[in-house]
Length: 81
Image (cartoon, rainbow, N blue to C red; front, side):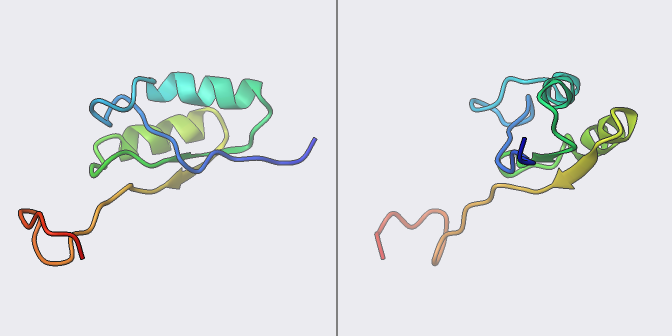
């Protein structure tokens, strides 16, 4: 089987978009034969330490990221570019 790692993963810390608990993400990834997993919550890194510690517990490689958004001028500017 080819190696595969999800690189776009949201946890319970991505409000309105993530539901999964960090431990259950690793349990499922391990069951699927993955050796690493990423965490890319929306605009926050609240789960990064918990994610890292869980990765070590499950003997998997943690890939810590962040899904961000950029505004050309201001987040309050509603005009399209």
